[in-house]
Image (tube, rainbow, N blue to C red; front, side):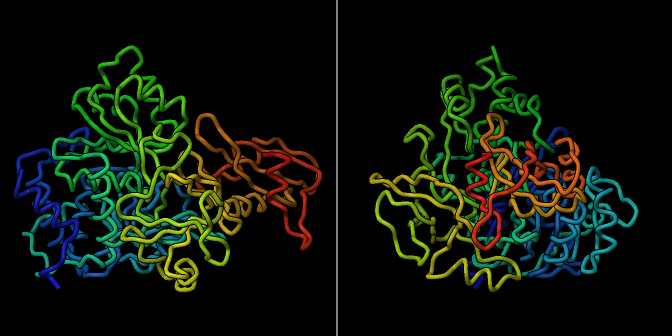
Length: 501
């Protein structure tokens, strides 16, 4: 019912009404006010409607961060379409799997990703229109073609529970799954950031993370919701980040290793360069966080979350209880359960289960997975942890059914890497595990048995990089005579970790 609806579009419209001339978006060559953003969003929404896009249709985006990316996010929110942000690090086949599953009606790309998008647009049967951020290309219209007419969006917009963003998580059993986030999910996540960090219209967010990642997308929306400004960079660039912080007085950003370390190194000897920062959100090593806080006087926040929980569901300053993942935030209930869903006691380890308005709507086209994930009225995360007597969550690894490695904040499932490794004709067996890494937090290690001869680790690493996204390739390779097995003949992953981790 329109009377009770509220969406990201309403946030954009509110900002325009209250502070139309204030800065909303900045890139290297554009400065866009809140009023101008609303105008662009309305015109784009009208253009999309004229092009046949309707409520519930999917709009895929394969692009680096840019104002145009935000225009599409806003227009989709106006007409009730769903945005599918695609990780531009993925290989052709990986992106093809996502498009095949999401069946988008339109595809938006930037000039850098146009060569990758051309064959995809041609082979994905659901894509009726393709647009590029910039000059028109072969088979792609310029985004400007949608902006030529007046804004004429529909009379009613999406409701709080309507789906808005589909973020494809790491591949399970070789196929990625799309986590569907509603307007409610995004708005409640924004309010959590606003409450925790004290965000206001004076805050300025540096977009260090890509908008296909929930951490980058979440903090962009939170800053927008607070009425602040978002400074966008196509990809992380330490020099540009430092310029935004020093000259534009940026106050907040999100990061995964080694972003913070790189920014600190760039600012070495220039303490005043970082003085405007109030908060950084992410995951990092204690030495880096300590150096950051001592240098800036700002606070580093960390926690636990997933794409499926619209980001963090536990959240605290890093050194409030060092090593923990913080306490349950204002909008989440967290419990630790055993394999039957029975709650565990204080300090006991089990699976982390979550419920509340940040929990996603479910996986796109995955009814069976949804029934399993939401069993007992809780979202079962597949991650292990414990809650201490003070209510702090302590992360304890992944459950056996959800082995996961996180190099630099990205999600990588071992089975996907193993599948690529086993395509090599001289690899007979493979087990992929995560190992500690001083720069990226965690690194990928492949333990392999060769069927014949010998091989240099670099050969296998590049072989894998040619088949899946390069961030999924092993950093370390060990060739062994045999892999430990369980009684049923399958690889004993825990023993592999103990022997080679």
